[in-house]
View 1: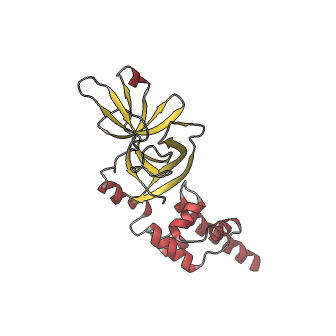
View 2: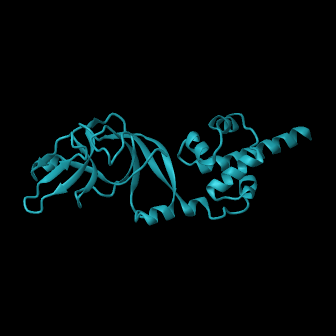
Length: 223
């Protein structure tokens, strides 16, 4: 009897932890712990050692993810303001775009996700955009882009559309610069906001080597 009850409780706990883990999605435990205001060690141990989550932990997760504690415990009720209906995950990549002389790309793997509210994207006019977060490096775009600031990039923009900040590749180097175009000659100006760095002018022929990855929609602080 005791053994049967223990098995039932273990299976029940497994279902609870599975629902909690589903809210992490493709992100990391550390990112989820920050989002839920829970110690990353405690959250990691909860999964590794199959510990019962404290009710205060479930309440924090419930508040952050828009689900009910009842759903976390039983899976019966639907999320309130469901996670899937109000939130969206934006992939974060290990690649860094250089705001300097160009960053050689050695790794483009996804490292995490940034979970944001769809209303926020709608306010930015980006609800239908294909977005990604990449890091910046270097100081050539100061003060617009602080050194190491994450960039929200619209990957759906793969050619020059209008003057603005673009992430582009030339050879193996990835850069973020301000691009503008002369309407008469078609020349592309590649400029840094930091006056210590030179401006480069490209003819239409030279600009063919400019492989635009996306347009920067937002310069963010560390999140």
